[in-house]
Length: 640
Image 1 (cartoon, rainbow, N blue to C red):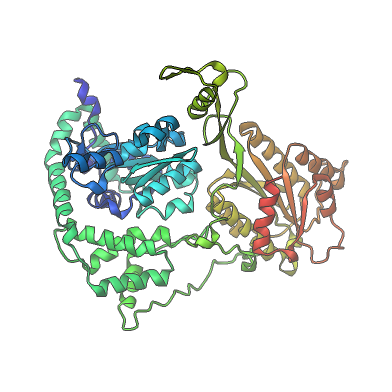
Image 2 (cartoon, rainbow, N blue to C red; image 1 turned 90 degrees about the vertical axis):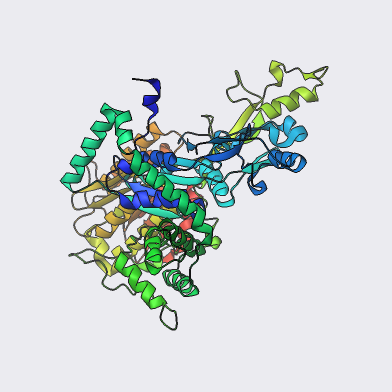
């Protein structure tokens, strides 16, 4: 088989079904200003295949020959500083024609690899030429593909967000700053079972689509046939779809040409704004809807947007923006969109907010969470920036990842050399030999990097019969839900232990998928005895296991209980002695503990004092709690 055959990409038009995913990708290919697409779905549903096939459909582009940033030689607004200076002086730039690139952003990429690294000494003299380009430079005017985007490191995500929003990548080191254009089609894929995406990143994606495994056996058989045919003879298979590929490629090219001429009526614009206002989405929602609707019309060869275009755009641009609070399960069916649009076109233009009646069906002894304890985080409000800033803990990195913040003299052989600090150290000692700077071993400096540590919140909830009295369980669930919301915003992992009846149960192992934890909490029944010792043992063993696999983890055990324990692990030892020993062991292994006391009267006998004393726990009475205090308590406890 010839060497080039191994690089043949599976044709985009050969992908079976998955129409919403293919449509969202095509729309972004025609109009990158839509803001990219997030593709959610389990593994094996063709997400990566579709993204790689997209690049093959895009028309070739002109780039400035020799420029590492893929600048547009015909548009000064899309040039780096160097190209712009040359363009101003020479009037034109040498160009080359080439295919659109697809750049993979690996999960383990460092900030320097993504944004680029800067030679400080050269930057002072030569500006942009001193920048060693990163992935954002390579992705300019192409596709930036982030697989498992929900697992992306916080610092890398921040750099990615800034570039995606502004179209410019700025690299700063030691007070020196250089920048270059970074406009790309952002495509992210994720498996929701591995954890939800950071809310700040979620709203940056223009569109979101979900892909599912095909249910029709005939379609599944067709997938098998096509994959087997492609693997047997990629050249023949690709040739088979050449006509369809060319037809779609031409359609995309025509849509790009007419897109600037496509318009939407004032009536439709007002209707779009009315729907978004009623759903309380960010302004980014209606902007994206208009861009997507215009692009849909352009693909159909029309110059005027119609209502059907708007409905289709809303189905991809709204659902992920309706999730203003963690653990909401937004659903927006096509019929709902149609009804919202009709109401928005009424004379007053208002859309009444759905009152949503009903609520979850209540089984016997299943209590709802008390909403008065809920942390009312609105994910699109700037006022909550301090709370929504990602992981709350900064620790010194030992694996070469994280943000470079300072330099130091290495102990032993340097592993992560800080070139800028090394050069300054040599220059300060006058180690010049003519025009060359001589660097000696004692001049070497090592980078000091910081990364955000992972926090593990072990939520231990008392679901025994005594919690049913005086609305204690509703309040306990309200507090627990608030804790989960806080963990969601700060990207903490959460484990969930419930105890009732004869023993405690780890109902949710440590996970970033906090929707699952919230779902378990909603369904948690109340009744039976209080096996508090069993719950403490479960929490202790869990923290031990986690600390073995992740040494930098910060565990926080939050126990919500009235302390009326009555089920020992060993009758001969007794509850009090067990709790004393288990609490002390939690403290010894470095776990912080918060005890949320649900007793109405603080003088009622219980084992609360035992837990607080021996775990050196933070003791908080339920009546004293409010949403702001919950967030403050968690933050201060993790900072210990």
